[in-house]
Length: 314
Image 1 (cartoon, helix red, strand yellow):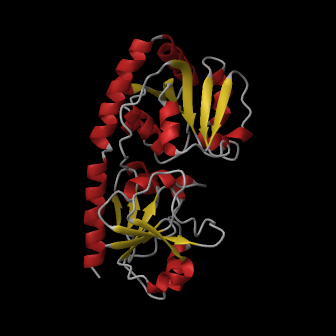
Image 2 (tube, rainbow, N blue to C red):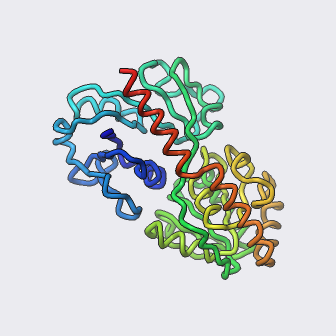
Image 3 (spheres, one colour):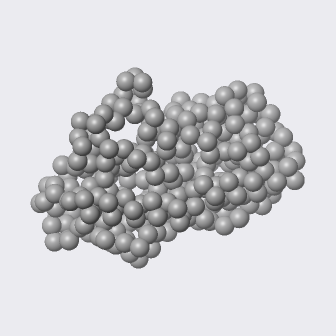
C-alpha cells in the first residue's frame, strides 16, 4: 500500500515505517509541524518518501494514518478526496480525565487505534470503533555496559512538561545518584545535584550513550507508555519507573523497580548503581520482557491487518 502519515512522533514512526509498504510524509517549505518530511535524527528506510504538500493530489494514496484531529481536514484539502483512514491516539487524555471525550468520539467512520490498553480505558471514545495496537520497537541490540554509575533519563521538553514528565522529581533522585538527561530542549533544565544534559542526539548515538549508564529512570507521571522506556529495556538496562499508567504492565518485577513512592525509587537507583552484577541481571530480564511483548514483528503484523481491513472495507 501507499500510506500517508505526518511525521509527528519520531520514535513511533521509526517502527511503523519498517513495514512492507510505501510511506508518504508531507513536506512544507518551513518543515513545520504539518510538514516535517523525513526524520533527520532517526534511521528511516528508503521506502519513506517526503512529498511537498502541494503535490499530494498527484499521489495515489491508499490509506491515511492520522495522529492529530486537524489532519482530517488537512488531508481532504491537500489530497482533494477522501481516503480510508485510521486515527492513532498516542496520548493519555488531559483535563478532567474520567470525563474526557475523544475528538473522534462522535464519528463511526474512522477507527481509533490506541497505543496502550490504558489509553483505551481512560478515553471516552464514544461510538467510534476502537482497538489497541501496542508499541513495537526496532531492536537496537544488547548494547548495555553500565560502565558509568549514573542514571539515564530520556525526556523531551522537560521544562514545559515538568509535572507530566516528572522532571520536578529529578533533584531528589540526583541527590542520591548522578543522572544524565537526554532529549530535546534538555539544556533548559536546571537540576540540583550532579547531572548532565545531552541535547537531541541522533537515535543511534543516544542509545549508545544511554547504555553506558548503570540504570534507566522513567519519571513520567502521565503518559500512555514512553517508547524511551521500552527502548532502554531492549538495550539491556535495568529500569526504575513510577508505577503509573501502562508502566505497571510493561515492567515485570525481575526487570527493575516500579513504585509510587519516591523513597522506594531512590533506594532502587542507589542499589543498582552500587551493584553492577545486580544491574546487569535485571537488565537482561528487561530486555527479554521488552522483546517478547514489544517486538517489531508483532507490531507490524497488527498494523498490516488493520490497514488491510480499513482499505478493504471501503
